[in-house]
Image (tube, rainbow, N blue to C red):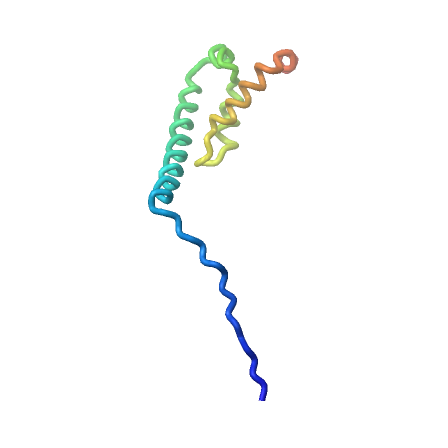
Length: 99
């Protein structure tokens, strides 16, 4: 008679994170979501500026629209605007050609 030894492969148990670390991670997630929502609201206020005021801060109305539409709900759209404004200041001759 043959017997087959069956062994159960158990992985190493992952140590649980301390409560303070879990609370810190949760707080950071909530703070990040709140910051994204607040910045989205502020970008909506930028729509009230006229085109020359937007150009003074290095943005166009199209960049405002694209920042709001390309970012997800919990993603911070201000990152898109920051890169657009920086790109415009680094390459002013290219932007003059674009009109």
